[in-house]
Image (tube, rainbow, N blue to C red; front, side, top):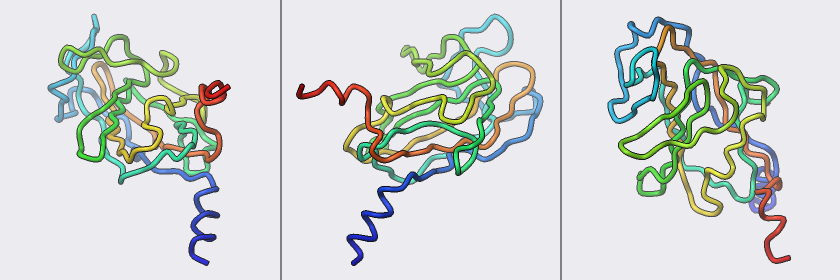
Length: 177
């Protein structure tokens, strides 16, 4: 019985909160900084300040599609000022991949340029930002999400990771053909 129940649960979409809603605050009032991150900007600070940060428990993709949204049911979008830094950690806690989502140009961690996902924007529709390609297909991982700001005011609405079973990766359709 428990196996059938577990299979039924895993066949349903699930949501994991990445960040809570964090009200708008002036950049200068944000005390924490990501000293290892540099933003290529003409206005504001090159070393961004931390608006909010959190890390998930270990997750498995298991063929699901992974997208971002603003609520557990994935009916709302989300907003971030300036950007969200997503870091994928392997089972040993080492960062394996990074991506930036939001209103920023080039972001660097050390001498590595971070890929941008999605539009250059402050707000996103539910399911608009697909991060499936960032995640390992069959290994456990955790996601560290950090909302960062470098100019004016910083804020982030709640952000959830939505895992939709069976959606899989788009390139999987071409494998083995």
